[in-house]
Image (cartoon, rainbow, N blue to C red):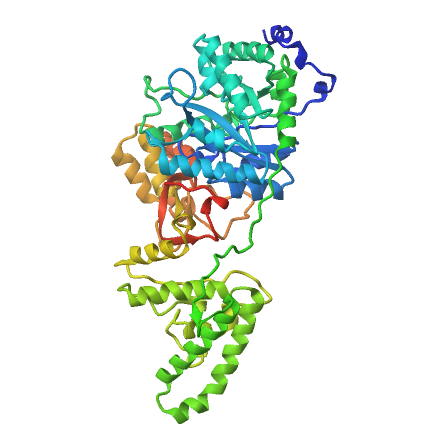
Length: 567
């Protein structure tokens, strides 16, 4: 049947397409939260094993997994392509109707634009709990982005499936105008009933209006054997029962990570659709600067009518702070004079080290908001961890412990031979903590300050209950199995079976070893075996997104110059 498509678009045929290499440009990982079970390590390994030179990540409305994916892919020698599947409004006859498209990052400007688009979606246009991108925003922020039409779920595909060719043509040309030479009609064959009709209609449209086509595969899970676990994950997100005959089946068994050979065979009748995956991969080249501290500029106050540089003010404030501390530590002037040399020697050593490592701004920023908190009704702890070993921190009133008196080492906190960001463990009282965050926002700009997202994962006990519910097992039964799993504080318990080669990980306690009754019941009871086998496939995956209780990010400028915002 596929061979019949060759005559539809003869201008797509080129000799070099015979040596085409397929690259996956669509991928939902576990960070899509609702419908992906691809673990980043596994799916990158699959691309490497298949010899694919590049791979894209296109999670649903977020870049949660982008940095992990970027680092993992580069480490394995595969080119990472960062992208997102977005919800879009403002196209077609019904301007309120939602459709989907994929945006792929070509360069740094594209990354910044995608970050801004996602931030706007989450902060300005939530529709049915989804961040929705407006067409007007795309018209403003499309530079550096390649757009894929979204297949049947996209605005062009929706019109084609409905048989409205005029509207499909209009929308396709509109998007081609927004993304000049960067818009592709997306073709998919993933075993769904309307796939073939859409492919034929899309190729015909592409031939008529001279737009390129590209083959993608909506990869939701890594291997064919992962289909049941993926469906269980979807049911957990939707509150559904796996065996419910009336449940809407949104995915097929075909949506695993297919090899290049499989995809080339699937689209043998449209070779340009395969070749264009490689062309798109060549057009995407993003380099991110990671591991380099990005600190906001500390606004230094006037001292004797003069504006000091941050380095000068850091030294000045530390010496002035030490004078105050010494007056408190040694009220007797003679004793203070006697003790001062060793304190000054330690202070100078620390100042030289901190300035050499380029971190005076960090101390000034932290000292500023800690002292504001202390003076404005938000109690702050005296200091914990290695930061208590810094005399500069004590002088700037970041900590309240004299490191010389308690013989604490500064080198445990900062060491020139191991350059890393300083890290003060600071305890703010829950009362009025929000005022401190408001102060920081006012000082550095609302666009530069944000709290941090956290990801809840499917831990051993919780995943057993979740999977048991979607399998429609009784609560009493699942709760009983869950309670057999050890739950000792400070230990990381896993449902995974101990490796047969004896190479056990020190990171985990294996539940089946720690609790023999659990292993015995799995061996004897089919229900327990089914429950645990499915739970193992989902254990550790991202379950939900939350907000960190205390982590606050301060950027040197707009946060969207570094990452998207989520709300």
